Length: 239
Length: 302
Image 1 (cartoon, rainbow over the protein chains, first blue to last red):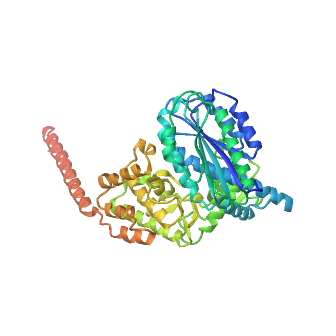
Image 2 (cartoon, rainbow over the protein chains, first blue to last red; image 1 turned 90 degrees about the vertical axis):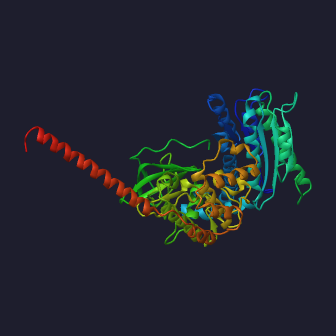
Image 3 (cartoon, rainbow over the protein chains, first blue to last red; image 1 turned 180 degrees about the vertical axis):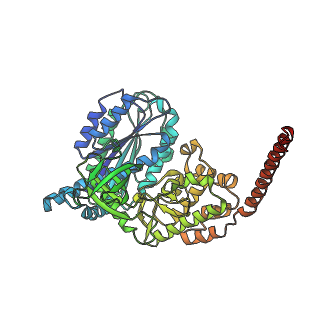
């Protein structure tokens, strides 16, 4: 992360348990090993408690080094932005912690609390300036049909929040399942804006819930984007 | 990092590692976006509110915000102490002034028109004070505005959204977020807070429909304009329309506009009610006396 100063995140928005393809928890673990953070928003509708889905959502976030929140559809947008912000802050804090340990032999938590505030000001400044590569994985299984308009608007809304940062933004959107036999479908390649027309056309609810393949697909996108950026260094327009 | 922990029980003592002060938990005041706030009492009896977050960083960051906006007459709670403890559920925390009063949405229905105007002016004055430091509140919403019913004093809680002008807003609530309605960027500034005050005022009179979240921003704005036209108190309508038309962009201009709102005078109605009440009691009394006399005559007491 310090090499190219880019934060890479996957945000999974789902309403249930995966039932197609490899284990999503393992997929999240693989992604996290490559420095990617996986956040999960579980959507609860009225009635369906979904004990198993709840458990899986938390396990994915734990394995992916991210956060998990289970929310009502109306809260997706504010939750997505809060999680992105907090996990970016966590990632940067880890980096700053490592630097502090290397230079002073102390982590942030070893500093007196009042002095930590100064470290956090630095973290906050970095968070505003660092490049963010984000892949949003949207569950479009049959049970999501009624929630898709809310989710679409939440993704548009998240981009509104992220694009006013000073640092560059590249956001991509994957739907799972895809069309026909596809497990996943790239709705939008990396770009600095969300293409709302593409979301409206491509997000159609159907079939099962291949969460694992979606996380793998998202991680591939992030890693190949990182390689491209490396080759074309130092600066390149995304998308 | 997968969700808030179970809250600490009332009576629990939390001992600070750095200051060696102790605080006793009195109860939960609220659950914020990133932690829990407890009512506490310090070992010397000083009442306070303790914010507990999951990470040391979050606590330190909010603490720095609270110190940024402190000072005499600050609408935000005064910071008291930041510390760590070994107690699970309160590893990292800070303590601030405990603010009494009730959230605006709870007191609003019972407020007289003149008091509503006074409360709104005080909210805007609080924001003006904050804006003078180059920061926006960003998370203006009824739950974050506490009103003291006796004095009508207004204070803000939850400094987590306070952001320097020009930076990205990091904490907001859709129903009071101008960007959600396609009115502005999600960027901290005086105008962002001014929009939030107008949206908050509308939300107090007009509850938002459940499908608002499914609609694109342009359609949400259409709903908003209709709500202002149909559901908002007519005396206030011109002010909020001017904000939505972007004619009012800062706290001072908003304060001036609110000062001109002509609210219904309560005096006349209150006087009328008194007269009716007096008449009613007089009727009851005369009925009682008549009945008593009738009985007395019947029983030959007089």
